[in-house]
View 1 (cartoon, rainbow, N blue to C red):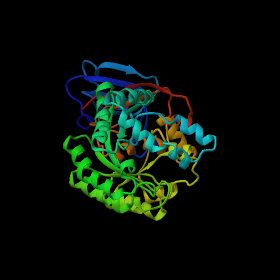
View 2 (view 1 turned 30 degrees about the vertical axis):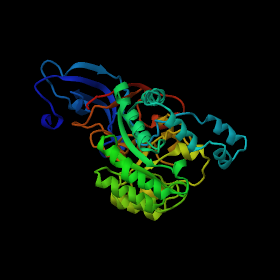
View 3 (view 1 turned 90 degrees about the horizontal axis):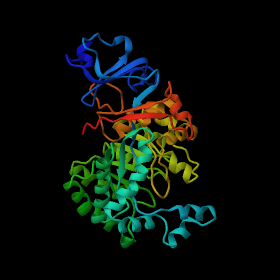
View 4 (view 1 turned 60 degrees about the vertical axis):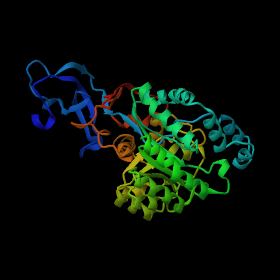
Length: 412
């Protein structure tokens, strides 16, 4: 037992006792351990188990002992799909739509994604960091310890790299782990109107190699949709990305079924995101590839969509499901991962356990991370501590944040 849990002759740095541990690992629902304890040494979990299994150790177990009096510990939350870096604001468009303006009318007036592209290009890197920090603090305040941030509003070599650099800088400003994703294949920029293939040439020949050379991207994403790019165009991007050693993921089947999920599964991608129009038969392809299905209820809600993702088919096929906010200025201006959990339960009929797995264990898998997302010896001590005794409370509440504190390992 001692060897398994990583005990040493020395005291640990810290131990939480009298805690409920939602380990998200094991056979019990939530991997729940009541009357549990969690020990930390050098930013790594060294014990996660029942209080009764703690050893007798001369001199005490840890330099710091924290009695949680029954409160809940979960893995630090993980938002595996955001567009946190962007310039400008589109609140005016939200109002215009409510007053009867169509998206086409708004776009003709210079709105839509083009307005965000313009504002992002005009913004300095410093300004992008400053405005993103306001949104990031909301995530941190809800227990998030790892967040994915995409580019995709620059759409030039210079501006896509600027966005990725800004995202990387957030780790220096806050105790947070940032995973960056190059989403240059997000939209056709104005200067390439009518020439999507020409823009994909730029992405493949210049933007992707430049991002890889600077080590700015942890993964590569695309938008496979009628208003985005075709499967053939996305496959070109995937081929170059994987030749550069970068894993891939995809915005797929949000508005129609173009077979994007099958495509990303063929490339053994990390995740397929949205999936409202996923053919139930394609769930098996995701399962066989180990590709995580990422649920994004914020955009579904904001756009008043009615086509539900096939949760039952994904569940039956054994596809791991993650949950994320899709925080972005146009279709999901949401900075609450807890609200996303609730939405997945109320709108998509996921269970609270599936929702919590979606922002911990499966959120990590959607990012290709193997050192976080569960409470287990040997993994990072990225924790969230909550003023509740049962993990179902996290998906139950609307607008009520139960977080007491985060404990971030900073094990970079």
